[in-house]
Amino acid sequence: GPYELIATTTEGFYVLTAIVFVLANAIAALVLYSRAGRAMRAVRDDPQLARSLGFGPAAIRTLAFALSGALAGVAGILHAYSFQLVVPELFAIDQALLAVMLIVLAGLGNVWAPVIAGTIYLLLYQVAPIDGDLRAGLLGLVVILVILLLPRGIVDAVPAWRRARAHRAAHHLEEAPA
View 1 (spheres, helix red, strand yellow):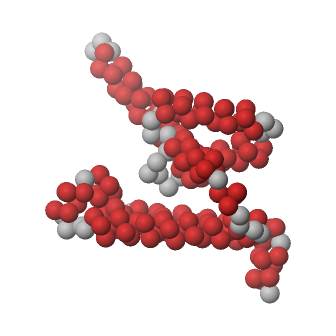
View 2 (cartoon, helix red, strand yellow):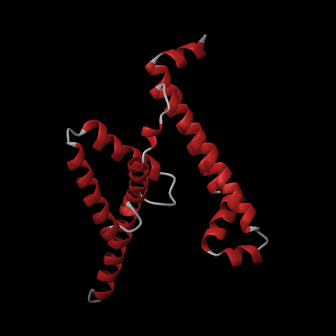
View 3 (cartoon, helix red, strand yellow):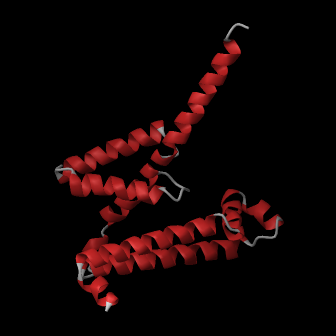
């Protein structure tokens, strides 16, 4: 049947991964724009204010942890199926640091950040013919530059550029002689 096709072919696995990706992003977007998402942001930004508004910070943090754990579990299942094994070496500290660096590079608090992080990973680790140490050094340099120049990450670069451009245009109009 159709489930055998997904489980036995590379193309089927890619389709399954794409479906899971779309569903995970839809869930993240639904949560982000729901009352629960607003509560999560309130607890993140100011737990005391959130508590005064009737949100229990411990319950909200538990919900966020459970949702992120569930999504990570699904990703882990796909990862294990893709490699057909699970060994501790796949989860060494350098892999954890790489994941954190990619998310910081892409930007925090944005549903597009993981997509950008995945694209950066794909380009650096699958497409570019760069040696391992050189690649790690290049990634480190890029992360430092992004932190210095784009503290909110790459995802915020285009909106930040548009805001700066609009600000310059408005400032230019104020200085123009009447």
